[in-house]
Length: 73
Image 1 (cartoon, rainbow, N blue to C red):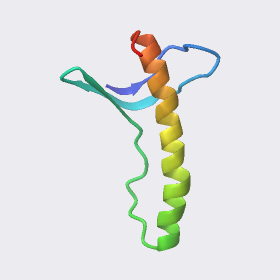
Image 2 (cartoon, rainbow, N blue to C red; image 1 turned 120 degrees about the horizontal axis):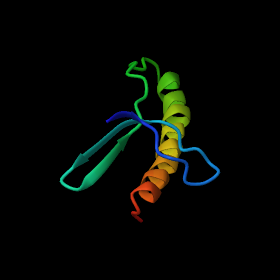
Image 3 (cartoon, rainbow, N blue to C red; image 1 turned 135 degrees about the vertical axis):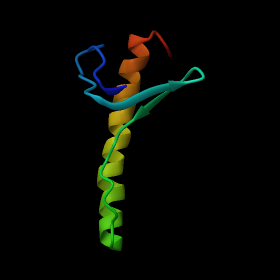
Image 4 (cartoon, rainbow, N blue to C red; image 1 turned 45 degrees about the horizontal axis):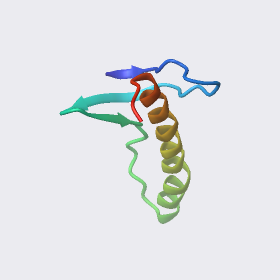
């Protein structure tokens, strides 16, 4: 499923889940970021420290909302 928005479980909005998939009882939440290939060490460092950390925070928030919606822990 693309662009799924879980219902609000609490005051914090989880936001849109870019890609949600289920395979053999395992739920996959994917946060799609830019496919741009970084060409310098500075670009790689900035991407890792900013974009990927933000994606990790988003996934944590979204996984909590999905688990609450599906009554999972």
